[in-house]
Image (tube, rainbow, N blue to C red):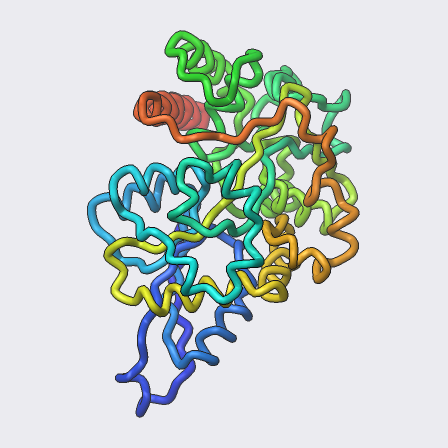
Length: 346
C-alpha cells in the first residue's frame, strides 16, 4: 500500500522559488507535524511517499530515483550502498551530529556507517489477543498451533519472515546455509493454513478491528495496539526476537543534497527526535533525546526492552550471497499462500 501527499505552505507568488524535498519512509513512522514545521521554517515543499516494506523502495530506486532521502532498515542501507546509490554522509554539515549514538553505527550499521544516520530502532516479536488463545504464547513455534487456523498475521518483509522461520528451527536468523534456508522455506509453507493475511501495515486494524488472534509485529505497532486495547500482549519469542534499526540515507543523485542535510540535522535535534519517538512508539537512537521521551514509554519494555527481553535476539545483516535466495523463497511461499487462499474463497 502506498500513499503520496504534498505539504504546501507558501503562497502562489513564492511557489515558483520553492525547493522540493522528496522523501520516502515507512507507514506511520514520523510526526507529520514535524514535517509541516520543517517545510514552513525553510520555505520548502515536501513530497512525502510511503513504502510498506524495504523491498518496495529498494526495487524502485535501484534502477531509477525520484527521491532525495529514504528511511530504510540497516540491511537495506548496505544493499543500496553496494549498488552505489548512496551519498557518503558529510558529518561536518550536521550541527546536531553529536546527538547521534555511535553505538548504533558500530553495531546495526557497521557495514554502512559512513552512509547513514540512525533513525529509530525496535524489535519484531509476537502480539496476541489474550481472549482468543487457549494457552500462553512463548515463541515463534507457537504460530504453528492448530488452534490458530486462519487467524495469524504474517509480516510482508521477506527477510523478517525467513528469519522467523530459521529461528523457529533453532538456526541463526542470518543463516547463509542453503540447506537451512530450504528447511525454513518448507516449514513456512506448513504455516499457510494458519495465515489470515500477510501485511506490514495497518496493524491496529488487523488486530483490534478484524479480530486476528496472533501475529508478527513491530514493537511500535504492538505498543499502539496495546494503547488501544487491554486484550493484547506482546512477547519476545524464546527462540529470540529480531532486533532492527532504521537509518536515513541521502541518494547519490539527489537534486537537493543541501536541503537533505538540513532535514537530517532538523530530525536529529534532540527534541525533534524525541517527538518522533513519542508519536510513533518506537525507540529513539539518540541518547540526548531520552530526557524528552514520555515516561510511560521509558518504563515500557515493548518500546525499550530489557537485556533479558533481547536474549537470543539477532540483528539482520545484508548478505549478497543469500539475498536472491531469500526473495525467491518468500515470493514462492506467497504465491502458494495466495493460490490456496483463492481456492478457499471459492
